[in-house]
Figure 1 (cartoon, rainbow, N blue to C red):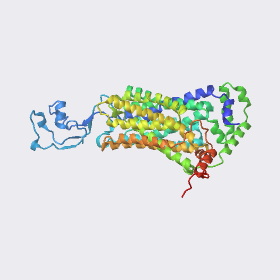
Figure 2: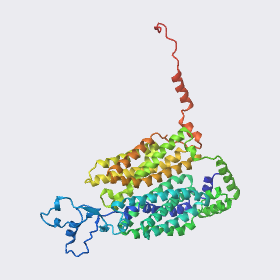
Figure 3: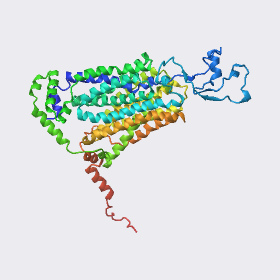
Figure 4: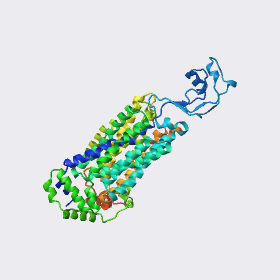
Length: 551
């Protein structure tokens, strides 16, 4: 008896599964609120040096005082000595030389009309310290990477539900602590721990939702979870618009996780994991509870420990052959697949977060841009599902990446004045990257055989996290050459799209079970190989009579 048969006996996609998925989906709405939160908590408004004469009773108005204290349009420097001659109609500098300037030694004055309080205004993350904004986001993504490694291993040992409950608590506690952070280093530490909890929630949510779902419903549930994240971007825009103070905003998106923590105690542990962990009695208890909730009381009474033990023995038998990460590069076809997928995973995430975390670059209303960036994911994922189903995985993956890269590169040549066109290209590129993400999860699971599928998925997710860590740091290169980040963000997905063309097509193909099966599919079929051999080694027949003999 297979586990899928057990789920069918206890109700398939019944009332339990619907309620279970709904409870797991609620926290997913809040994932985007933490992933993209720094677009608002680290937003930068207009700023200038604070002038030292503001409190000296000079009798000058604010405009005149600013004129003699700070060079026009300058954000990071001020005059060493007040330039009183600038107040004269025909005044000139002494000796005809440029006035000497110095860094902003007394801090900065900020325009707080749109962003009353951010981490930038609180800790002066401008001018020489502006790179710290990108560093904070990279540390958050580093936490996501570490969380994937740590919580992924712990969930296999201690169970999915237990780790999910802990991650809800850690997410709420660390997010709340972040809102009370007294210094920037402490803020970064709590953000790192928040990122680790976020990845733990994602991993265990996916495991629980899929392991309790019948086979036919898994694709629908996975798609629904993806749309919950997209809708969560709408929620972030609305909450950020209503709450402009960064501490209160951080607190508002963190407190709901305490509610998730409380109701997570009701969630049922994965029966599949309980069986693999050698706990058949508890698995039987959970399955009977599910059957009764699905109104399958008779089926619940028929379940016994022997059926579960037989399944457990079958599962353990299938796991006897050990495989390591080296199997991803041991054979030529799998090695080619792994190399190409490394490009796809890394550069998709790299370009996605390069766009999604730079909303202020488009000189548009940041709240509207966040809404539009979230909205474009919905049709993009829908189109990708259609092309994946009716055209193919390779075509969808390559086209989505190449179009995304070309859209980003095209923005380099669009003047800053054409804000609508620049924004439209960025939105189109972000939608293509969302479609690429939607495709690569399915494509990777179909390309790798069952025996190393989880290893391959783990490698891909790790590279995606590394890409998200690298993306904010590349933004710092714009200080040297303003268009350099866009050149890198655009060229990367184009290169990944070209790499995707070397992947084999998996549409309408059964899932491979072993590495040998993947290698055999890459070789020509026996009849094709025989025909090719005949063509290559065919000898010319006897010359017809009357034909000239060769000299």
